Image 1 (cartoon, rainbow, N blue to C red):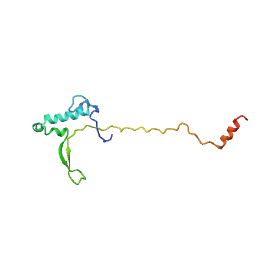
Image 2 (cartoon, rainbow, N blue to C red; image 1 turned 135 degrees about the horizontal axis):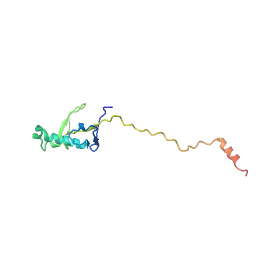
Image 3 (tube, rainbow, N blue to C red; image 1 turned 60 degrees about the vertical axis):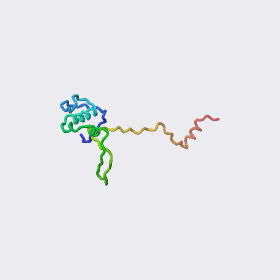
Image 4 (cartoon, rainbow, N blue to C red; image 1 turned 180 degrees about the horizontal axis):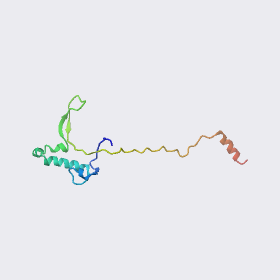
Length: 129
């Protein structure tokens, strides 16, 4: 098993093998989007610190983003833009997906170049005229 986790599309479905591993959602089958939405709702509603300060100003953190500047690795200057918080669900397959490689197709009928003897054979096969 590798550790090559990849983000799941929000509409991809997860089925937990062990129901005791359920978190945030009561059923073992759910869309990735449902898990992230539930995490955001719990963050907004259940944390007393967040609950006291969550307002229309904090909502953009999990929607369209908030205006900010960032200094990224390798950058020489600050870059202006928006920052947002995303909660993602990732998946790592036990076995990597095997890609099928198409076998080379044989050409149907390849016309071989005519042999000099073919003309002699035709002359022999033709009735005397």
